[in-house]
Length: 306
Image (cartoon, rainbow, N blue to C red; front, side, top):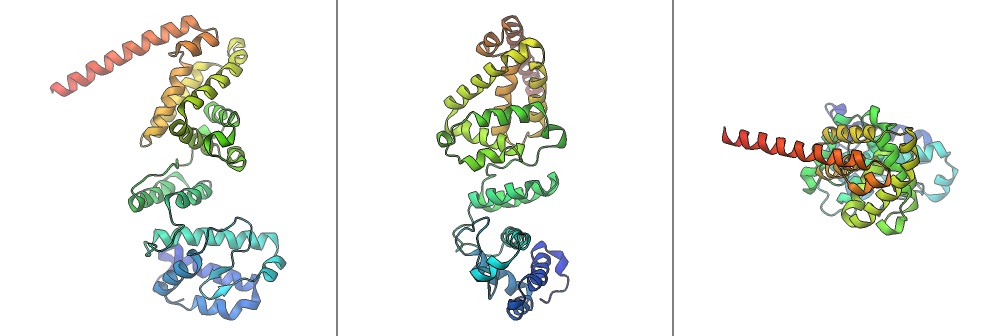
């Protein structure tokens, strides 16, 4: 490839790296790989989109077939590769797919470049990016698709092992996947990606809020003994929910869901308070909530008169 500064773009940098690594893994395709690498940057991006990206959605383990312009891996060669080489090739393709779209190469004829496709790739990348990079790429795609999608940025480290993340995982396990249009694999993914549990709960809150409410109450009932023994302090859950609301202010659906959790574990919801044996605290919490709302309304009115 020829370019004045190929490191200026993730796509061109990774494309070149992939060509070099693929020659080592698949020397039988060396001539075709060198031809792909010799393309100028504009042609490389356009041909990648048309020949590699514009195929049916890839399986996460199967032979992807076309991997570079003019380079197709045959099944016999794919089968002879080590598991590590196959993973590396698929990882390169995921990076190149996303970065090619990110370049704003014309993808109007590429059927699988949808919001769902972007969401899937961003979830895969979430653990590999810091929050700033993830937000930057999410914003770029929001401008392209007119939608933020269902993805949350990576949870800050302090929340990854937090009480709310554990609660979200427990709630997701209470689902029957088919009730919310999920797969068993999506449910299992929450164990390695706690942020995914929150996203699933957000999706459930829009698709079937009544069923989600039932799940919330079942989990609260299971926590009852821990709460009554003092092993689990509901106020700590409520405080963590409030922190998360501040952390994700730009995601209204997430904030609304966290407000439900905060209310529940502050015992502002009578049923939750009754089930956990905290009726008195529930009444006090309701009074505090009303007072807080009055104060906020009073502040808003004063600000509006200025």
